Amino acid sequence: MLSDSNEDSQNTITAYKRRITALEEEIQGLRNPSKPQPRGDKYLAAGRAIRRLVTLTDRIEDLVGEADRRACMSVDEFSCTEHSDEEIRLYDSYKALMKHLPGLGRDLAAKADSDDLNFVFKHLNKGADGARGDDAAGLKASVISWVMSFHPTSQSVVEPHEADPRDKAGRGFYHTATGRLICPVDYDWSDSKHRAGIRNYLPDFRVTADSWPCMLYKDEMYDPEHPTKGIFKNGLLVKAFKYIFTSPSSADSGVAIEDDELNSEPTPGPAQKRRKGPNERRTRSNLRFALSSCNSWRTQDEDFDYDQFYNNMVSYFEGVQSDAEKDEISNLLLWWNRSVFGRTNVSDYRPQATEKMSVAATLRKRRPAELTPLLTCSSLLIHLLVFFETRASGY
Image (tube, rainbow, N blue to C red; front, side):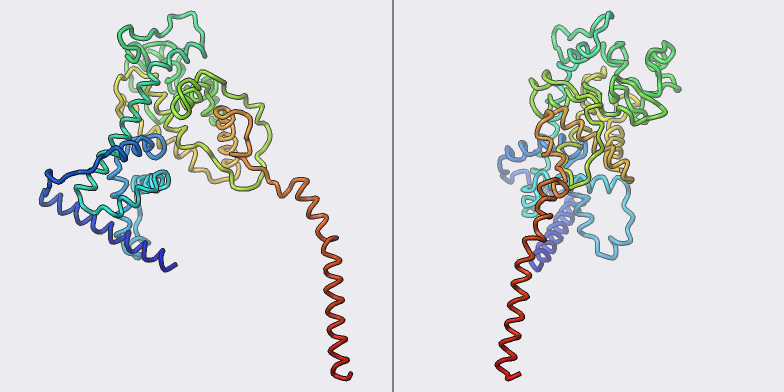
């Protein structure tokens, strides 16, 4: 307990040092470019996981800055401070960063100098952005073949650019196949008026992150009476996830399982080990970008905000409150795990309540019978002791 207290005190002191150094640098503009820097390979490699597991666009220095701000607050200040949604999101991302890169916390605690910190932040961000660029570039070239295999059509297909298969000219809302997938579910892509309104940027047909794209729903079918039915169960999403997180070749094997295979209710039991969640949300952002006509990544594509799109998905998965909502998310994660990793080894991500099964019930049934002789022997020993004590005392 004492060691934990000392560690917390040291972390707070280090946070103060970083804050003071940052403020001094901001006020005085002090820099030391001649100072030799270590190699950044370690942080480049570590940074590649950040865009896939931690945050879609946030810079590492912003996450650490929010953690330092909280560490420098007194107990009274912290208890009476209302944190904004942005601050809460940054701090949640910081905790995820420390979870996935535990060694980074030790490195940051040992580096209070601004040049050392800037070096670490620079290479982590570079590795993170590089991984996102690689994922986006790979999906650009592969997504069209998936689209045409899922939805064979008599219309002209989206041909890859002759000079560069990653060139996205003619995609997005400029082509019927890709336009139908990224069309907001609140509009009807089959309606020529809606298509024209979207393509001409009419106010009544703005494409924003306030509406889910059709590509999130199974078979692109949205039911306004049951808006959660089929959401996040599109086969293209599974292919994109496997392309990024398992291997590009795995995206061509296997298909998403059918809902009727998961018609049973989740069994209450040990805490479920979820293999996925944040990863899926980043996959959907990458897929939406690959289907669009935008050639280079940016958080704002016309009226569509990828940051807001991502945060909306975070809210859907992590903002559950009722037991029914928790069961819904649990079943959705089960569907994803089976679709990506196969139908076997299901116990890895949904452990059974073994204490309610036959072996445990049988053992519980036998225990009282097994304990009876022991209790009888114990009682006999007690009586014998009492007997000998009374004999020794003369009674």
